Amino acid sequence: MNALKNILSLIVFFILCGSPLADGAAVRSSVDTGDAYYNQGQYDKAIKEYSKAISINPSLADAYYHRGLCYYLIGQYDDAIGDYTKALSLYPSPPDAQVYHSRGIAYLKKGLYDESIEDYTAAISINPQFPEAYHNRGIAYSRKGLYDEAIENYNKAISLRPSFAEAYFSRGVAYVGKASADFRRLCDMGNKLACDNLKELSE
Image (cartoon, rainbow, N blue to C red; front, side, top):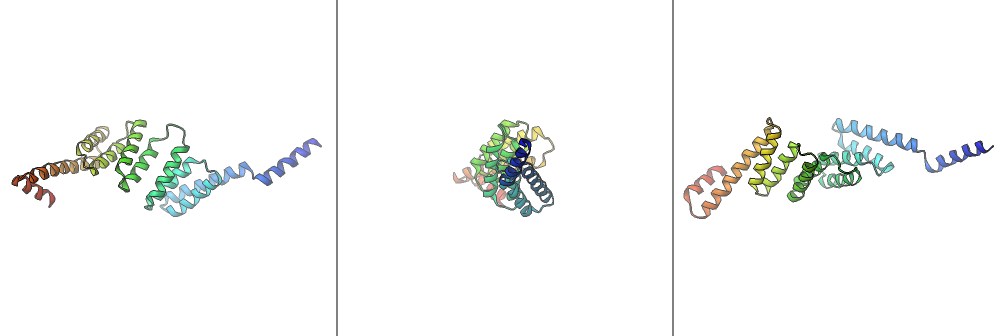
């Protein structure tokens, strides 16, 4: 008799509260479907599936991170940053360096160079062998006109990956930027040759 009461109590509990097993299956299904849409480039549909998973389990760090990636790819950088930030608060410490790197890219897109540098630095502190993080930190420094710091980061990226074509290109751009800054200073001081060289670099 007691056993029957226990079974009935469990049935009532699951009816009132929902089955944890059913919730887990629903979360997994939404995440898997979201991943499939993501891989197909259907980012809006992926966002809806990740949002379903989050509504069931608000502590699902991966769902926030993956939804953030989708928001980034459709140009909604603020939403992406919000999801990356939430994911970072939920992942165990230290999180994967890629999460900081992804948020750094979103900050870079918004022109928030100091914030992007901070995130790339965090990513590098977790994974010092991360050439993309050095490269992108170099871009942020370059956008701030800090060409020496940019070149230093490009050098590190290239040392980690000697075939990193984008880093070579970015370093070349930084050298041109550094040269332009020097020619501009000399031109302002009345040096005609510097003015001529600055004009050539600008053409």
